[in-house]
Picture 1 (cartoon, rainbow, N blue to C red):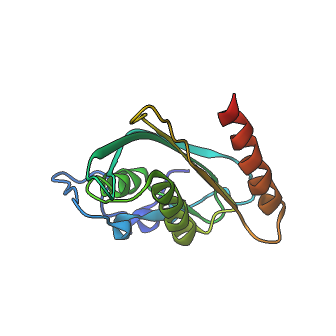
Picture 2 (cartoon, rainbow, N blue to C red; picture 1 turned 180 degrees about the vertical axis):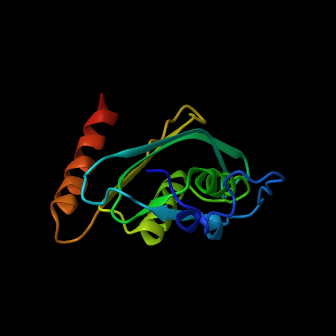
Picture 3 (cartoon, one colour; picture 1 turned 90 degrees about the vertical axis):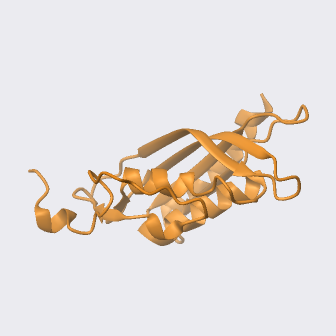
Length: 160
């Protein structure tokens, strides 16, 4: 069944022309919509191949591919708002690890998902690649155990 106007009334960015791109960190742009299938466990994946932020020390740009996977509960993040949110890191000075953890925490606060993970595959600079990974599973549930296991799986994946 298609979504009703009532269900989408809080989505202010999708389908609008004249989108404004913030040049400062803007978690307030994130919007959610109701998950019509909260009884199902299913994974939603976002791939942002053009993420940029700034080194907090040198001010040089850092480039990354950001992967976000989550199992929603009652709320889901709207993709255009997520794009604008990720774009807002463009002029923010944070280390790679900070960016990934900030994204994870902001999305957990926004949606309260069952499970969420964020991985950054940053372009090497100075001959070093950094691939930070952060995972969250709702406390006291099977998802908490999955998050811990995924953390160690990510470590093994990066060691190759």
